[in-house]
Length: 468
Image (cartoon, rainbow, N blue to C red; front, side, top):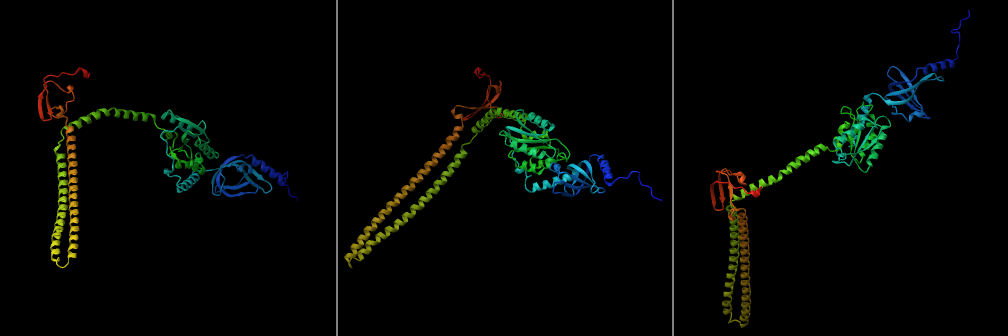
């Protein structure tokens, strides 16, 4: 008995494959997440890789026209999110693959790992050392601002700058602050503001966001550009709990509003400091007057005997040392002169004893005696001249010391104004009287004059009308 057909209509393999392809296309696109495995690139530029979640595996492919525009080039072990345009059924091999047009890293863990690796490299090179950063100017001519066009970050920074320093000049340079194109655009904005002739500081700002949103500020090229920028840069990116790497190589403000505190001075604080300084300067004349009064009061109480006695003691000591040295020198000269005289007296006696032996010897001895006398005469004159010089030097030193003592005595005496007809009036407790405004009738005063003091009683007070 012949077998019955399985189906009323029998299809070819190609026809059924067409049905499968049509059914797969009806699934449509999606965004899926998975781990990358088995990455390959064909000679024609097609990119293939597998996606798996540990239980299922799918093959993905990227056409050459889309490879160059990928935000992230997948590598084995990456956790990524891919945008699937459609599934594709390849009938010749009976295989299914996913047509992918976009790839980005997925999961904060992977992004944080890459951030930590980049930060470690930059720290090892010293790019995160605060000593390498350009010094922030106290009064910048203009502030360059890099932020998203019409973004809250741009408006927040401009508002904070003008509130803190209304006269500030701002040069805005909008740029993308998220996505694959953002790092290159931010670097270009840095270069343009760096070349601006008036910009002395740059603020790069973006509000908060996830690790994925701020991934462009973890770009190594941008971080190195910030470190190399000739103008100091303030990074106001994210928040304190999510700090991208760029905040480590520049001045970090963490929020756009706080960037103004680093970029410009505060007008209110400067006005307050100026007011305090003005008040301090206003008190200077009074303080000088009080100091002059204290100096005059102390000058009246100076005792000149102490300094004069000290100077006199020093002069006496100098004179004593000079006299002792002169006496010792003259005594030595006298001893040598006495010995020379003794030798001179002995010469004629020796000559007479030898007269009978030879007249020629006597004549020679006479000549020697004459020469010896001349030498002794010259030596005596030299001794006398030396004594005169020593006496003159001692006299000059004594006169100089006398002049110094006299000068100091006159200087001390000049401080005492009482011998010139002035007097010092004070209350019994020693408080000085500066004018009639300090007096009351029947008050007791003490008057200090150059030769004594007097206690007086005020009977009447007559103010000078010209003092008003």
